[in-house]
Length: 401
Image 1 (cartoon, rainbow, N blue to C red):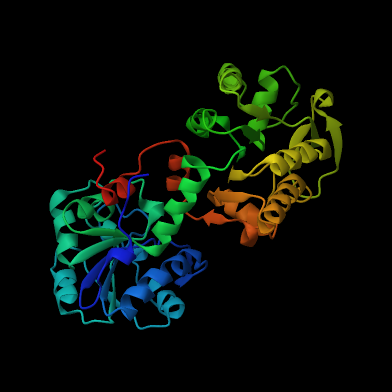
Image 2 (image 1 turned 90 degrees about the horizontal axis):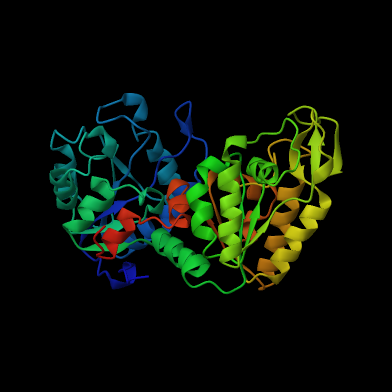
């Protein structure tokens, strides 16, 4: 991975530092419901303030599509940010055409933290407008990107600004990049990847990239049914993309040619209905009935997954192994997650996980805290796993994409 500058390379004293953060958090009735993303950026902001900088925060919220949409304002985030930071935060209301942002930034004093309004209120943000990138840069002396979750977007506040001013990675960005490098670019082997979720169609590129990198790919969730059906196994009325059977077989063949093992369920927990507490039973994969729905991996499959983890040195996890949101069909995800967490805690495994459902599943299993790193980046994490360039990261590293 090419070198990028971090806060260790920045003399922040007396400088106005523009920091791109991710504040696209869930808000209900005017209050932040989950402050996880806010908590991730606190170390960077606090460090810069403590070092005598004025901090100007840039962030987006939802998709106003270049218009001022009051319900998509970042104003409700102000109090949650102040609480997490333990400092005063000044919210600057602007439509990015009225000059208020620049005036407030120019007047900012050392130790002051400004939260600018939604960057997507300007139509040029998502178009990576060059003039807007220069406007963002003019708010401060240097730029810090601490929003890995937005790094897969070539926007003015993530890529454009980094092309026209000195740029650095914030602490959250730095931690994310180091974790990803440890997981795929320089992994300790064997490397095991868990790929779960509902549909194969959403993770074709992911599977294609991992088949050339991982030693074992554990496929779970609804997408495992497509592979099972492609191999001739009955899947009953389970969620299954039967039209992707040829592609599933090609993925298996490609993985085999690259000495990558595809680990599929050998038994399953089936039920007649997709609902919590539905009567269920464990069956061999060959014995799934026409009116059965596969909702979780069975005990022999779980044992095989744990055995793969035991041999691994690095684990990358994206997606649940079953219908984890419905009890009792969360057993495979919970048991596998707790086993990975225990191995990590014992120093036997480097474990990296990411994706919305993944984070929720690992948290539900009470395993997240013991994983080496949990990414909250969502789309950026998935695109990195797919091997795609991330414009916001490449701009920090001086790479042209």
